[in-house]
View 1 (cartoon, rainbow, N blue to C red):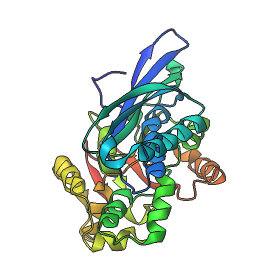
View 2 (view 1 turned 45 degrees about the horizontal axis):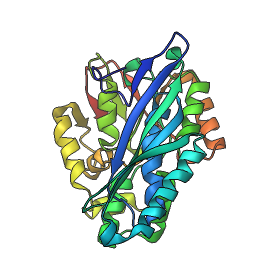
View 3 (view 1 turned 120 degrees about the horizontal axis):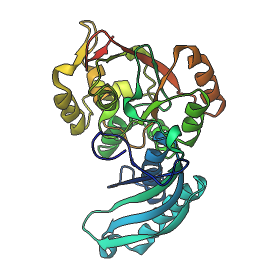
View 4 (view 1 turned 135 degrees about the vertical axis):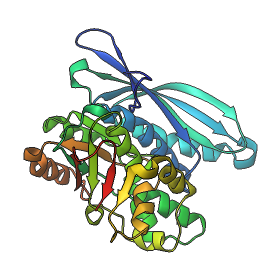
Length: 306
């Protein structure tokens, strides 16, 4: 897997039994607490390995930081948060690189391992597959509201917890139920990533908006217009590929286009395995795991909101 198709990471075959997965991700703070920010950024970077079906092996810090402005104590907290998540993932933190910058940015370059025959890809979807989302939506909307001190404390606490959660258990369940197509939901929003899953195929996707798992308060904040600019960019990018029924409130378009930080896995599951997948996810603490739609052959490349 390389740059010819927009997958979550690159995969380099070493032998018939072993391949390397490589990915990198970093971004400015999305929460105020430095330790939580470090956890979230690290979980987000590690997620690409899980989205490909692999396990993380090593990670390297990528840091841009204004030491004179914020002080080294803040940087230490960020790195401690990231190191905790790398350790939780069973990987080794083996170094990194730091530069001085006016705005903090942190993330990881991650290398993982996988057997070539076990790789999840975005494009392996088939007509009739059901779409399961493992984490709630709302991180872009809630963190945007938080910048104006308008996000309910409970909503901010809840979404922070989920952004910091590894997608390891979700990937394990995907393997158990025979998933072949998977991705993680990040900056392109739910429908942006679904669009990548059906890219170049003769398939479409149907999303049932009332089945979408939301952190409590997300809908109300979106109705107040507290939506990040990236949601509009995602919506503009999809254009007429994104279709909604006449009775769908406009606010749902903002929600499905909301850029997510360290979002859940979106997996294409055979209909016969849906109940099993949801039960296993709930047993592992993924209480928001939901069946949100399906892959259809009704039209090529379209995403329908119903």
